[in-house]
Structures are given as C-alpha cells and as structure tokens.
Length: 368
Length: 232
Image (cartoon, one colour):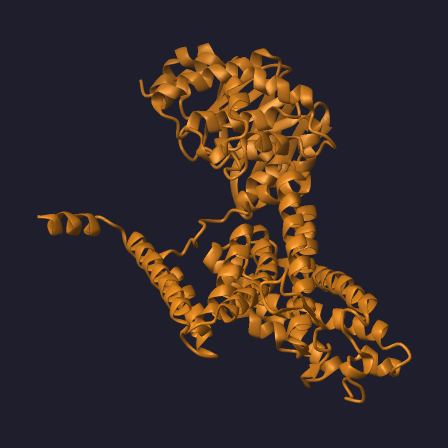
C-alpha cells in the first residue's frame, strides 16, 4: 500500500525533478563518503582542505572569466567563442607589462616585450613574484584589464557592431573567426613556446591562522582580487544607473530601446566590464599556474561555458556560482578518481544539466 | 500637436501603411481601430521611429520627427507603451520606473510621486519584481514607466490585450485618468466599441489606409462602421 503511494508520487514527478532528486542524492552520498573517509583516516583533513581551497581558487578564476561571457551573452545575445582568446589576451598583455616593469636592468627590452620569446632569460632571473616585484605584478594586473578592454572594443567596432542585428548564429560563427585570428596574432608576436613567466609563489606559514599548513601568497592575492571584483560588479549591477540599464537590456532589448536607454552605450559598457574581468582572469590564471601559452584561454573555454550553462546562460550570479561548482567539483573529485578524469565529471555534469535543466540551475536569462 | 500626413511606412521592403493621415490635438484622446492586420500598431510604431519610413511626414509640435530614432523622439515628449513584453520583468517596479527616466541625469522625484499618485499599488509594491505582478499591474508599470518623462503624448498599443475581461474596464479607467491629467493619448485598440465610447476622436484603418474618421460617438452610431467593424 505504501509502496503504491510512493510510486504514485514518483511517477507524478517531471524528469527535471527526478534529475534534481538524483543529483541531490548523489551529492549527499558523496558528502557522507567524505565524512566516512575522514573518520576512518583514509582521507587526511589537510588533503580535503587543500582540495577545497584549490577548488575555490579554480572556481573563482573560472567564474570571473564566465561572468564576461555571460554578460556579452545576455546583452549582445550571442555565444562568444572568442572569449577564451580574450582570456589569453589578458594574460599576454598583463604579463608583458609585468616583464617590462620587473625586468628593468636584468634583461634587454626585446626579451621583456615578447615575454622571453627567445628563451634568453627566465622568471627566476627576474625574480618575478609578488614580494620581490609587487609593482610589476600589480601593474600587469591593471594593464591586463585595460589591454583586453581595448582589444575587445576594437573587435566589436570592426566585427560585431556591423552585425548587431544579424542574430545569434552568424555572430557565433563570426566569433569563431575572431577567436582564430586573435590566437594567431598572439602566436605571430610571441611564438608558440610555452614559457614559465612567474616564479613559484612565496608561502606564508602560520598554522594558527591558516587552515592549511601554509598559504600560497599568489593564490591568496588571486582570491582577494577576484572577490573584490565580484562584489564590485554586484554593487554596480544592483545600485548604479548603468547597472540597472544593463539588467534592463539583458531582460528586454526592444523595450530598452523604446524606453530611451542608449543601447550602444550600454553595449560599450558591457564590453568594458566583461572584457576587463576576463583579462584579469587570464592574468590571474597565469599567476596561479605560472606558465603561459597561446592556448591558455582556448583550453579553458569549455570549462567557462560549462560554468555559464550550469548557472543558467545569461545569469551573472549563476556564472560565478557555476564557476565555483565546477572548480570545487573538479578538485574534490580527486578524492575518488584521479587526474584528468575529473574533467570528465565536470563535463558529464554539464551535459546532464543541458539535457534535464537547460535553463541552468538558477533559471533563465536574467542578469540579476 | 501630432500631425501625420500621407504616411507610407512598413518593415524593410514590406509596405504596410499607404497615405495615412492622422492628427492628435493638445490633450486629445484619439483611438485607432480596425480589423486585424490593418496596420494599427504600425501607425503607432511609425510615429515612434520603429518602422521603415517610406514617405509622407510625421510632425510633432511643429518638428519633423520621421526617420529619427526612438531615444531621440522620447526627448520631444512622446511616450510609448508597446503591446507585449512591456515591463522589465527581472527588475523591480521602482527600477522599471527609473528606467523610464534614463535620459535624465537624476530620477525626477516629482514624476515618480505623480506616477505613485495615479497608481498607488505601484508604490506599495515598488520593491517587487515586475514579472511577478498580475497582467493589470504590469500594464500599470508599463504606463507608469512611459509617464516618467511627463510626455505630452502617450502612445498605447492595444493596452487591453492579454488582460482578463473584468480588468479591461479598469484599464480604460486608467487611460481616462492619464488623459484627464492633461496628457494626450493615441491608442490602438481591438476592443473597438469601448475604445470609441471613451475617446474624443477615432480613426478606422483598413488595409493600411484611412477609412473613416470622426468623433468616437459618431463612429459608434454609424451604420456602416457598426456593420463592417463592430460586429453589428
């Protein structure tokens, strides 16, 4: 009798709800398993906290990059496949600046301008890390934002602006072209070589304050910068006139037009903010992984899209949350599976979301 | 105040309006009725610069406004409430109203107060998301947004569309309130009888051309108009 009742209730659920239940059940089982492993000593607490911390670091980076993608999607209405290469652009412009500033008197200007394309110097020789060269690191961060903004605006002027009303698919295809062009312009100048551009981060040890044995300063800088930017973006969107107009335009572009919102100015602001955050994300990614390559952003693009889809395409808060979920899931999966397979878990999650809840975990096109 | 003469307009290559004449005086309440596909909404969009201008003139307070962009036309004192999707549903009621005054440097507090006076429920619900309100209330938000710049002329595109029948009467009352406060109204309506009863003057548009033009009451009483367009 009771089984019948339960069956009736289950068959009354939609596929979406069943998927949700399954997902929640899966997460609960995993959390219980983590607790069990901690209890029997299979998993050290420090290992778990390291996974979580690295998840937070990766998640914030992906989230920061995903915000830019989500913004251009919700306001310009197309999936920008050149977004990954804007990440790369930020990394290259920023680290060029860091090398130019940090390498004064150490190596010649040509080597610095092309970030050691000739391999004649090294990050070690420049001692490029936050304590030794704070000016270079911070200067690079600022230029990464500005450089990416300028390049994104130039691309918008040259390509996307002419196609403003062309619809999502032509714009998407154009953006693939832009992605390739941008990537190989970078290769033209900097070459294909992967290079180490930052020294290993200094560590601070202070077991009383930090939950891990030591803290990696570069990661700490990254987390603080990302959180400041995200909070700043939130304040801008919620409380400024421009932010409200951006939400209005994401919500209903035609209505924004007849309301008298200057749509081209809002689009300009969208590129400035979106590309700025993206460039910073690219710069910080390199600060964390210490190496730089012309494919750095391209390889991240799928993860960025996964974050955006997870949070609901067009939702900025969704993109950040999506990034965090992907980052944490990607790292926490190491408890059960090893190495590259964690990516499989992240993308499997993305595919399941696309099938069962295509509007994303947090619902439709909404910037707020 | 608004004078449309010999207007030809449409979308891209498709011409919808042929030689349309129309006038709205200061503070006047004018409706455009006609069968589906007659180009009623297109008249309104043409005034607001949302169609392809193909000929004729649109003059507002002596200034030629045809071919100008909506964000410019707004500054001349015309407000427009589209038929569908006419609120920013993810924004709060207050934010919707603020967007109506985007072209001003600051939100005009007196205009905001005036809108709240006309539609008190909006003040009560100002922090609620517009999308979570009922159809009638959303219509108020949309009208309120268009009134934030205190326009001389308000364009209303089928305001009764999508409203429950018992709310239609309330909607017409609200248009009366707006008009009585001195704002001229140009309204397109499918609910022709009620619209003609309320307005000062009406136009019947058929296949993109003027067919009849007269006082609302006269049109309502006209045998021909009744038989052809008002269903007896």
